[in-house]
Image (cartoon, rainbow, N blue to C red):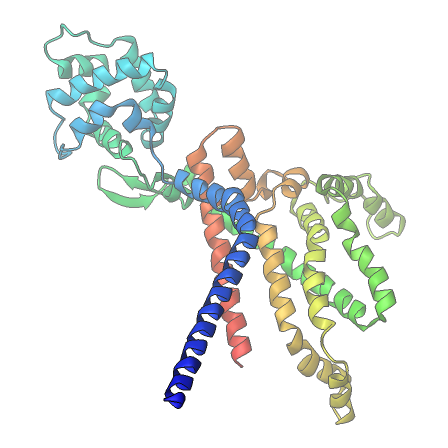
Length: 415
C-alpha cells in the first residue's frame, strides 16, 4: 500500500508541476504580448491602416452610386441593348436635382468624364434645362435637352461607373481601359498611354542608381572592413554624415554643384576637359548623380556588416595554396558577401523607385518618376483613385522584389 501511495503522490506532484509550468508559460506569453502590444498597435495605426486605405481607394467608386442612387437601381436590371425604360429617365432627372441641391455635381461630372470625355458637358447642359414633373415623356424631354441621352454608349458608361467598385484606376495605371461597347479590356488611346513608360523609367533609373551604388559602395565597404576598428569607426562617421543633413539641403547642394556655372563645370573647364559648360542638372544625369550620392550609405552599411564578419584567413589560405590574389578574392571572398550584396541592392533599389524630392528638384519633365505623379494626383488634381492605383502598383512591385529576395536568400542558406 505504501508503494501505491508513493506512486500516487509522485503522480500528483508531477501533475501539479506540469500545471505550474503551464501557468508560468501562460504568464510569460501574456507579458511578452503586453510588451509588443504598443508596437503592434503603432504598426497597425501608422502603417497597416493607411496602406489598406490606399489600396481600397484604388478600386473605390462612390461618386455615381452616391449621387445617382435611384438611377443606379433602375439600371441594375438593364441589359444594355436598347435605351433604358422611362423609369430610368425619370430616376435620372430626380437624382440630378437632388445632386445639384447636395453639391455633388462636380464629383459626379468629374467621374463620368473619365468614361466619356464630354460627359461633363452633357451633365452641365442637362442641368440648365432639366424637364419639370409635368412632362409626360421624361425620355423624350431628356433627349431633346441633349442628344447624348439617346445614345446607348452614354448609358452604358453611366451603368459601368455606377458600381461601388471599379477596375478603372488600376487599368488606367497600366495604360488599359474597359470598353463598355464591347465589354472587353483594351489598350488606352496613345495620348493617354503614359504610365507604363513612367514605370519603366522609374525601374530603369532605380536600376542604374543601384548599380552605381554597388560599384562605388563595394570597395568602400571592403576598405572599411579591412581597416583596424578604431580607424574604421572614425571613417564610418563620414559614411553616416549625410544622414544628419536634410535631403532637401543635399539635393539643393547638388543643384549648385551641377549648374552651368557650378563648381564641377568650372573645374572641368579649368582642367581643359571641356571647352563650354555641359548640362548636368535638370536632366537624367543630374537625377542619377544626386540619387546615387543620397542612397550610397544604404549600400555601404549592409555590405560592411557582412564583410566585417568574414575571416581574412580564408583568402590568405587560398593564396598560400597557389591561387592568384584576384582569383582568391573573387572565388573565396566575394561569394561570402552575397547576402550583403542582395540586402544592399534590394534596399537601395526599393528606396530609389520610391524617390520624389530629388527627381522633382534636379530632374526635368522627362525624368519624373511614379512618386511624382502620385503627389500630382494627390495634391493638384485631387484624384485619389489614380494616386492610389499608382501607389498600389508600386507597392506590389516592391513586395514582389522582397519575395524574390526572400526566395534567393532561402536557396542560398539551403546550400
